[in-house]
Length: 273
Image (cartoon, rainbow, N blue to C red; front, side, top):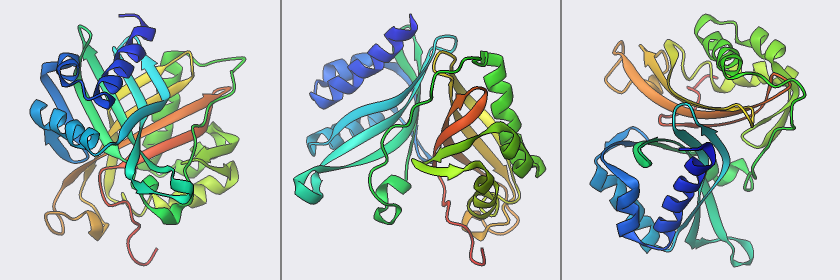
């Protein structure tokens, strides 16, 4: 299946959901699909039912930040839900976004991972954040280089080298969840809002989608260990946990220029931070 066909196939799936054509929706999904929404693993019927409920309420789905990986037959997007029954100023529907990674086998969805953005659902984080795109790179990275640069950044949280890696590997100004941030401010920001949340845990890549043409990468992360953060101590103090996160990054001239992320866990920093 050609790369453009992957995007067209997923768009056709979204169109079928929006038009409530459930026979077509079923046709797009493999009988043995693996699906998760947040922390919850879903059966095929549960996956379809979730879309049915949303469509019956009048919600409409669209996607941006398309990341298409021919090698792994996969697509990642920011999946946008326009909510009919929640009105904002001038009667326009509100919008929220999730991050999805979708894998195909023989043209049908075989793995569907979705995590809701809590930031987009919380009014205190401000107005809707539009899509962010990268400027074309004169010296683009290869697939293996994108993989390597991303893992260098990710594992810097595991070994405590994040500040130096960010200052070396990020663009001078970056977009973090739609907000412009100077590179020099990122290490301090992440030290406040990420490091204390996942203290005691290690990050690892579970799924990856790389679009070398767009210089973009999307990942499904498994974050595992014994958390120091009480908000993540689901089974009690000293017990191991495994939580998930989705993230998307864009590169410009080999440096990370923007990021979206959504967590399937309580990402509020613990008290005292």
